[in-house]
Structures are given as C-alpha cells and as structure tokens.
Length: 214
Ligand SMILES: O=C(NCCCCc1cc2ccncc2s1)c1cc(-c2ccc(F)cc2)cc(O)c1O
Ligand SMILES: [Mg+2]
Image (cartoon, rainbow, N blue to C red):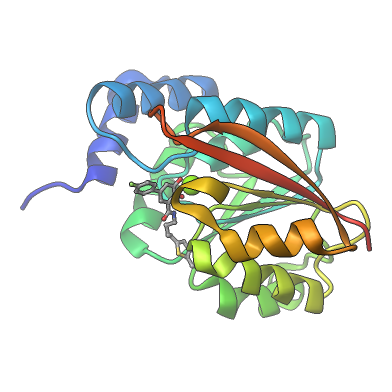
C-alpha cells in the first residue's frame, strides 16, 4: 500500500537524524519539507519565534493543540526544564502514530504526553485526567475554527492563570479571524503579532502571542 506523507516524513527523520538529538530531528524535517514534500509543520522561520517565546517563558506546563508529526512538540519539549511537562492533543490517529515515533526518536518521550482525541472533548477533562492545574503556555495549531471556542473553554475550565501565554499559529494563513478579533479586543488579554511566513513558503503568515491577564 502507498505510504502517507507523515510516514515519508518519519522515514526522513530515521534516515537523517541522530537518535536522542532533538535539533537533528527538527533539521531533518525542515530539510524534507523544503527539498521533498511540503508539510504543515510550524517550520523553521516561525519555529525560531516559538523558540524565543518558550525560552523567555521557561514554562513548567505546556499544552499543544494539534501535534501532527510532532515537529513543534520536539521543538518545545527540547527547551523545557527537567521536570516540565508537555501535553499534546492530536485528533488523527495516523498523525499520532507518526508523532509518537518522531518524539521517541528525539528522546523526548519522558517530557511529552500525547493524547488522541478532539480538543473540545479533552480540555474539560484536563485537570482531573492529566493532573494539571493550569498551563503556562498553550500552543494552538489545530483546526483554525476551534481556536476561539477552545480558548473560551480553557478560560471556563480554569486552565489559564494570570500570565499564561497563548501562542497561535496560522493567524493569517489559513487564518483565524474570529480568534484574532477576540484576543485583540478582550481586556483579559495583551496580544502581540509576530509577522512571518507560512512554513517553507513566501506567503505571509504569523504567530499571535496573547498573555492572559486573569
Ligand atoms: O490545518 C492546519 N492544522 C490543523 C490540522 C488539524 C489537526 C487537528 C488536531 C486536533 C487536535 C485536537 N482536536 C482537534 C484537532 S484537529 C494547518 C494548515 C496549514 C495550511 C496552510 C496553507 C495551505 F495551503 C494548506 C494548509 C498550515 C498550518 O500550519 C496548519 O497548522
Ligand atoms: Mg500550523
């Protein structure tokens, strides 16, 4: 049977990256996506912005919505302090299966908990099922029309505290207009747009960083 793009991406990681070396995994994926096949990873340009937000925040608890092949999972987890935890949600079981292997290849399985399911179902169960009170950082990279409802859900479930940071991918392309309008207009958030490009292209895209003010 034909392989899928995520499976081919995983093959490139196993072929070109060193086990236990997260930076080589990130490099191998970026090379595959530039030279062989485009894939919807946050990519190297926006990835540098993601890195700077993570290193500045030094989060102890991170929630990622949308794992895909685990590229941003590896980028974030490789920068976390020793006892920090990253929970990442993926809806598509085929993506999840590839992501688990990419995360393992990077040697980061102890820092990452990949949970399969829909964000709308899992977010209300976070505190009880995953023993987490609040998240210091949330990286939104899943269905673009779920960014706003899931943000409201996280507020309602008490998963955000004063200082929690929401970092949203693709706010221009494919675009998340309702989410942008909400976080930019709400007195409960301090928002900042980081202009960049859609991964591996010259198309404009960017990340929106929104600090929850409590
Ligand atoms: O759809 C994108 N990303 C979400 C995939 C949906 C996966 C989900 C995960 C999950 C977890 C929990 N609950 C529900 C869900 S749904 C996406 C698309 C493009 C793009 C841009 C230009 C194009 F021409 C074509 C694609 C670029 C990107 O960076 C993306 O992130
Ligand atoms: Mg994205």
